Image (cartoon, helix red, strand yellow):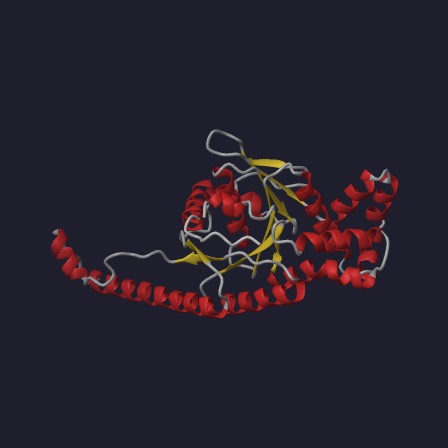
Length: 322
């Protein structure tokens, strides 16, 4: 499958995963990958954190769109914005000529009272804005950096919950529109992110089945972040390798190198066990992103991860169309 074909299978891709597995990094890398194959991309960040801005080495995101990757010969461009419930409500009311009411709701704290009285209203405001952005057609792909896995399920369940609680009116209409978006694989799908470790894999499998059973969304491939890339020569004894290269090792160096090789081999074996288990428990394609062994990726790191995504997306089989 051509990478652009996969990335436009749905107009919205919601990226979700357990906290700490690199969900935001994957969202950023996916945006760079999509832009590099000619797609105009909008990233929507819903938690108001600085992680996305740090990934692109730019200023803090706001409700106003900000350019993260300029459109150029080799990129269609990446834009980003935050969408919080307060901002989404202000936007919704302002579009309907209710500016004074919107300001009073936020400044008085009434939104918090309403959200307590109507569970799910804050999430539906955010998802309603995502739906509006998708319908606008301004971007080829909208990437949503979703809340961490636990909240992601309630976040995506908000529409069905509100449809049960509110029978008529604008809230019902908004919830129905969001439910239509989430339930249509031609418009939206979920990309789950994990790390090749036991606990994140357990949580991802549980989240995947919960999303399918309770929300009814389409799942894309699983992205496994932080996979140790193959390292040639680990099985060769350091003294043998040094002699072949004409290098003299100092005392203790050979044993230190043996220990490092054993550690790396053991870590790789453990990761492979989790990848195998994940494939057995969740039969979805896996996209493996290499561990770059740094907490400060920068744009060069994002480009490396984006290239890895593009290469693997190209090997995916095309999905049969109904």
